[in-house]
Amino acid sequence: MSGNPKLAGICAVSLSGGYFASTVQAPPTDLTFLAVGQGDCTVFRHAGATVLIDAGPATPRFDAGDRIIAPTLRKMGVKHVDIVLLTHPDADHVGGLVGLAKRKRVGKVALPLHFKGHPQVATLLAKIRLLEKDVLWVSDRDELKIGAATLNIRMPKYIETESDNEGSMFVKLRVGNGSAVFTGDASVHTEARVSGRYEWRAQLLKAGHHGSRTSTGDAMLSAVSPEAVIISCGRNNSYGHPHQEVLDRLGQSGVKALRTDREGHIRFKLTRRGFERD
Ligand SMILES: [Zn+2]
Image (cartoon, rainbow, N blue to C red):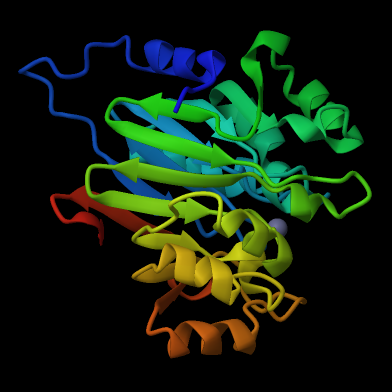
C-alpha cells in the first residue's frame, strides 16, 4: 500500500532526534485514552513522537485542551505534540485544540479532505494559526508511519448533506503486537460500510460516538474482534452515554468495557504481548 507522501514526511520530522543513544532511556510506547469529559482525546507516544487522535471538547466555560490535555501531557513529560488527527470537526473532538495549542506546540493537524472548507474547520484553523503547509488533508488509504508504528486511515464515502459524524476518519494503529481502532462518531451504518474494506482485527476498539446506541454495531465489533472497548464519555452526561444497549452488546460478545467517566485516564503500555493495561 502506498502512503501519502505528505504523511510519510512527518516521520522524518518526528524522528530526527537520535533518541536511541545508549545513554538515553528509550522513550515509552503507550496509548492513553484521556478522561476529557464528554468528548474524545487519545494520546499515542512512540519513538519520541506524540500523536493525538482528537483533541477533546470545549464549551464557552470549559476547554479540555487547556484544563486537562495540556497539564496531563506535561505530567507525561510531553513537550510538544507532533501531529493531531481530527476524526471530524465536531466541538467535542476539535474544541480543545485551541486551548492545547496555546500551551503546547502543535506541529501538524490532519483532517479528512472532505471537510476542507467546512465552516467549523476554517474557524478552528484560524484560531490555532497553523501554517497551511502544516495542515494535512487526508484521504482514504493514507498512512502515517512513526518509527515501527503505522496508522492506517480509511475514509467513509461522505455526502455533505449527512451529519459530520458520518465523515469520521477511521484509523487503525499498529505497533509491535499492539493494535487499536478508532472510528470517531460514525454510526453503525457507516461502520458497516467501512468494516468490510480493511483488515480491522485489533486488540482495542474505541467505542464509536461515546458509547451511543447508534454506534459500535455488530459489523464493526466482529470485524475488530477486540479484547476491550474503551468508552470515552463525561460523568453523568446528558446524552445517557454509554447506552445500556452498547454495554449489553459488548457483554454478549465477551468484550470488556472500560469507561473514562468511571476510571479516568486509561493507559496501555506496549509489551511483547501488545498493549497491556498499565
Ligand atoms: Zn463526539
